[in-house]
Length: 89
Image (tube, rainbow, N blue to C red; front, side):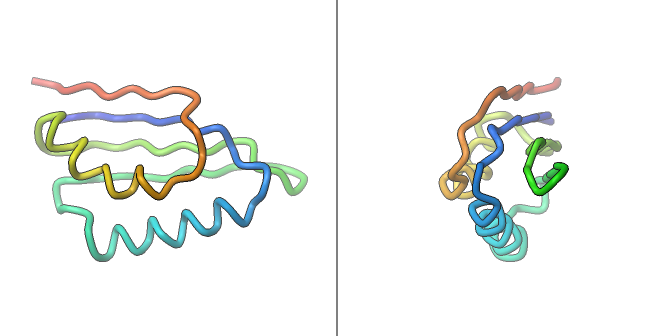
């Protein structure tokens, strides 16, 4: 099992995030393997995005997680501010 947590630098343009979330929904419906549990968290105030995270679990080894998550990572336009990926035994 592999746990992951990604903190992203929130985009200044909310339409960028909206476009990514549409791609995320498509990924979840058409490409995501059943071993992948992922949650996207977005928060903000006064019309700005202050928090943008992805975290979850993959029921498999780290290399299989990286392969499964790669299509989603490829379409996310925002840079990572921190990330943690841990394979549990």
